[in-house]
Image (tube, rainbow, N blue to C red; front, top):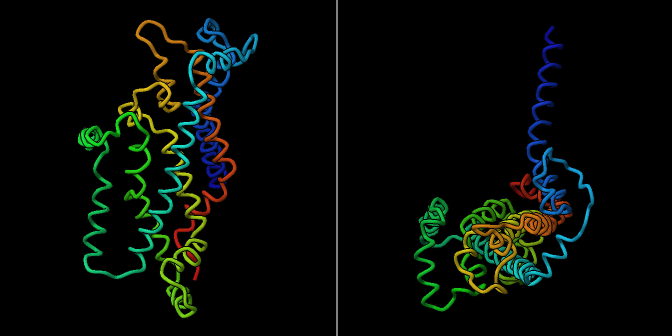
Length: 276
């Protein structure tokens, strides 16, 4: 009786997880199918996931009617540059907090942690005023520079680097390595899985960033792809065929990055500490 009840609960759990997975996958499939349909067929009743006459006209229209290739390039280079700088500064900051003792280290780290609970929307208006005065509005610099040493990244890397044995660092010092050499030659290779997972988190966050670019950017050729797609929405008419095609183009690179690096992402998240 007990074994039968266990199998029934396990079956119910699988059914529940399958239904939950369907609720997440179906919207993506509908978006993908709609990107190959004309506007009139997208909202036809009864709805269908299979286009009657699949066509690439929406994708051609997207790149012909607006500078979407430029918008996509803006998104890619902002995300890549931001991720590269953020990984460097957050790893360096985490190394400092994890392996060096200096006056005010603990209070400074508490301030860093406290900054994580402040919603970005609270600081958005003051930041906009500052960037307007230094001439950064309608440029890409506010999307790259300010977040490169964020509190979450430094906290994450500090927790990982704390697991690096001090004996490794001392051995490198005895061999004549400088502190920056210890960072680049000993610490970074040791915590590479965590760096990879943090890089994926940063890249996805920057790629999906919408509110801050929407506030800052004005020129059509400086927009990111997400903002460019949002601007297709009009008060009277919205070309949902182009919106669906643009959403697919914007989503595919993220899926590709995650599929190619999912092993490093899971290893980095699950490691938590480095074996001594």
